[in-house]
Image (cartoon, rainbow, N blue to C red):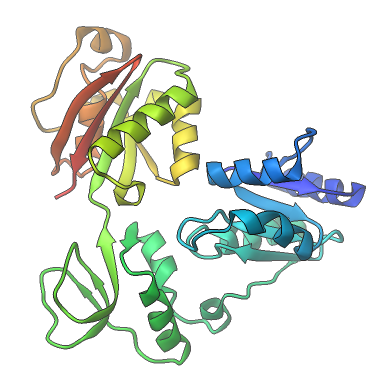
Length: 313
């Protein structure tokens, strides 16, 4: 995830430099242009980037307020005080990963992470963190509060995986659909999107092609388990743009592994001569299902790009 920082003093700039030096890379990208704070904040929210404010919490709150919408989709926001003493995640601590980012920044700075999410403070089970770590989508967000309340009170959390049903009501069910009684329903993400593209393909074109395709298939981004492609495309700016915008993991395979994909694929001699395998998008999609899925959308061609979608079984 891209992490965009902004500071308002020389001390703040020094803090960003210290973080990046300790990380050995540009861990935080610092705002240096004349773009307004409103535009900077909006663009980072739209791109799904983490926002790091070096300054007062109140400043961050005022700028992010117009863009805060939903705990399951908001960008993570972190505040570091101008003295570099405290690192405070203030938005999307679990699903967006703000807590983990804050802890990393605190370690790099030698600062104190100020974590305020109740489950963390109480050392209790976090339902939304569990969903993120296991790539599950949350079907009824109101259930998070119910389960968290039980966990904070020290009560046992019951969980049922599909191929049941449970005889008694449970706290969490992991299944596509259910008639059983529960507090929180988490659904496995059923789709993998396979991609192929020419070198240095325009980011905007890939983003538009991707969005149009999944929309036509009636697929929500939160239903996508992974984006998959050949390993030589992993560092393409267009792939990074997709990963950053949708926060979907990217899985890559080399050409030898792609050749082991099971199924009937749409071959291309041009693609074979270029990358060493006759098809990238379909093979990558199937392999990312564990070689057990089925194609629900075969190779679809755009201008210098291809896409296919597989359903996990």
